[in-house]
Length: 69
Image (cartoon, rainbow, N blue to C red; front, side):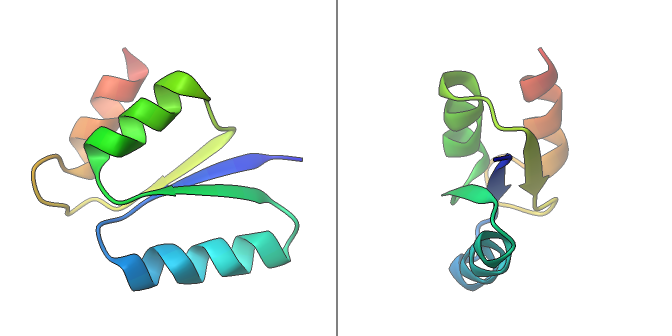
């Protein structure tokens, strides 16, 4: 089963994406900001990351840059 990480600062968006993806039989984890998302990527790398671009503190582009290192 493919694992997907959803990183978004808006709880409602995280929850909707999680519900839809789980309905489609994906394993889904969520993070409410870039820092927590990077921790999850480091500890248990997902197959796919869906990340919001505009987030406080660390935006999605910064998350991508750090995840690629």
